[in-house]
Image 1 (tube, rainbow, N blue to C red):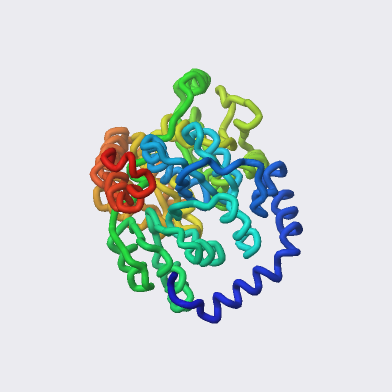
Image 2 (tube, rainbow, N blue to C red):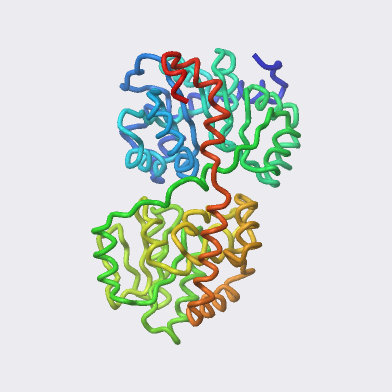
Length: 432
């Protein structure tokens, strides 16, 4: 077991214990906002009807869609070696993704609220033999309790932005008390490793698992039907957008359609439930908005096609040769550009990309993406690429080559995990 808890973590544990009676109110509020699934609310209290499988169990936790996507190939490789796997996450969208893409037999549960008695119930039931936490979703009660039970904890695909690093440095003893409970931190980059090491973690650099993730799949029949419906129109896209960025794309569409009357703008909001409000904004600007969630097609009249259903980025990147990566023109930190680059989109992004700083820096340095400071320059760049297909395709090719060169994290991660995996399947010790 690691060092004793500092006062701040003791206070957190006391607060979480005292707040337990309020959790039904919290979950009811989240349910109204579409952030919970009613039939699965008991999982938030670690109540489940799913039995623990027999034998050693590996537990993989990721906060949301990005982390579960990054973990998917790792999960598949572990599953192929015969390991039993429990996956937890905290969002509805990640649960839907897990249902679509996890191998048969892999169990998904919502992570329980970080209240001591729910944590104890969760660990009592599942009794994991190894816990892999993705990136930086650290729940103090869960980490402390799992460590107290002797469960090996490993931080996988560790990412820590400069902003988060500076925040964590304000409470160094508390952060160190958590990070030292991890046997190992597998960091994405040199910068991530430096930050984690400064805070007290034992670090290896294995690279970014998201780079090794295959491009998102698409249903061929659905794609063909949509492509036929669009019938040769000029398409631009905005992926994983946040509030404010859709309004920018609406204004840009109004500007650009003067020179390109056949223009179709596709928007995939980071939170699909925002689709109807985006449609209202588009219609207020005099555009015809079409919602995929309603089974609609853009045909020759739609201006804005809103992909407000889960798992649509593969469709968007294949349709739109020019893509704005969302979360970058607002103060969010940017969304993952790797899939867009792999599928040949020419990428534009704003200055706020600290969530994926190293990847964006590599893309920009290789001229595989372009940064724009605001919506005005974004409109100019899109128009330039619409006019100059050769320049656009050169950027897309440079982007694809850049992310391909950064691959290999999956194999390095599995090699680093091997000393912890071998004891769980002694009969398969030669299968590594």
